[in-house]
Amino acid sequence: MKPFWDKDRESEETFKKINEKGIAKAEKKLGVILPDTYKKLILEQNGGYSLHNAFPTDQPNGWAEDHVSFDHLKGIAKDEGIMDSDYLIEEWELPEGLVLICGDGHTWIALDYRETKEHPPIHYFDLEDETDFKLADSFDELLAGHYTAE
Picture 1 (cartoon, rainbow, N blue to C red):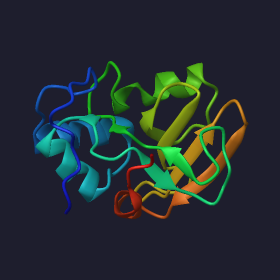
Picture 2: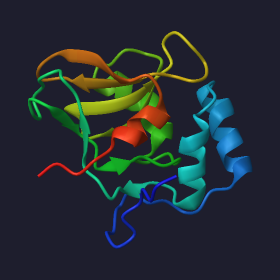
Picture 3: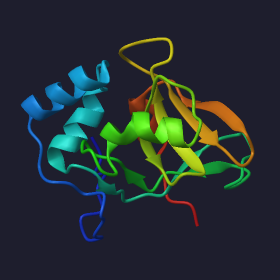
């Protein structure tokens, strides 16, 4: 797996280290199986900024014509982490069944568990443009396409 975390950049979304038992508790509470690669990244560093900032798309959106912003990954924690997904879904009127892994309120990247409990596709939501589209078939595909946009 190629390096993912920008360890030189401080983030309020980097939480205390978590172990496999903590991840299992989070999965049980969320009622889903998180992607294996996500779990590996979270064991390495529990959330924070990534080395790259974008994922390509042919779907124009409020961010750009050819990509979406993907500059951080939410870790497993209550405040600002993926455990806040239910609260944020309600607050931002997003569909139920998502685990929000990146976003700031107006745009979100989510693990989409609306039709599955494991191996979710990745969806992008832009609330200002009222868009919801699939970015990738899997978390691994999301990581593989992750790049730096100028």
